[in-house]
Length: 250
Image (cartoon, rainbow, N blue to C red; front, side, top):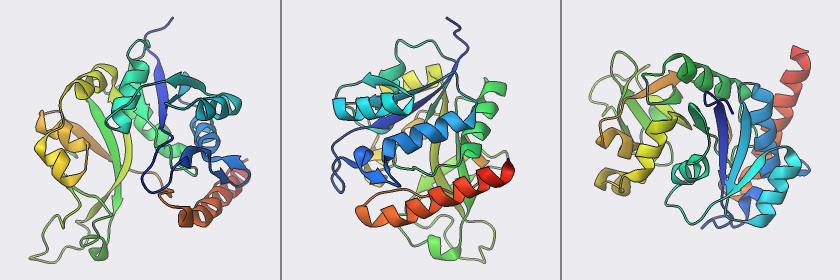
């Protein structure tokens, strides 16, 4: 089997504090995990799409949607679950595809996959979009600041940069999609949780604490996450918009 494969891995656990069974909730007539699998397949840049899960019901839904389910144990985070799923898989690049974004733009997946395939010296890449001054004080919006080459300096729920001067054009909102060179992913999962990661509740700070370069690319488009049941109508509207765009492209 070719070791130079690019894999999409969707972590999908059943338990959730705010929304138990979220991967199986029906959105626009399908389980949410099926929509995410479809978005990954539509991207056309993966050799295989896997769903890493701890639940047989999710595994069945993933298989019906065209992904290969991989059963995993208890994991600290979604990225740790992805790492467990690919530990014995031949691959060069692995994307951690968020399982709660049924309208994830396939263009974002292609952007990360193609960047990492062509930059094997970059261990991790992620995405961001321009933010607004109102985003600064919202702890639910993760901000990122980068150096002049687009390498992440820090991620935070707090206001960064602190607005002591006009901040037009300097706020970057993190888009939580990650791509890894396979060895960087396995290294990441082998490290214990760091203090900054625990305090902020942001696992990407584990990578920065260990000195890994994390390149931040400009996302091709925004996405909609389903965190609670009230988010479902927005997700269905975003799915309809994606379908309309795809139809227009044809």
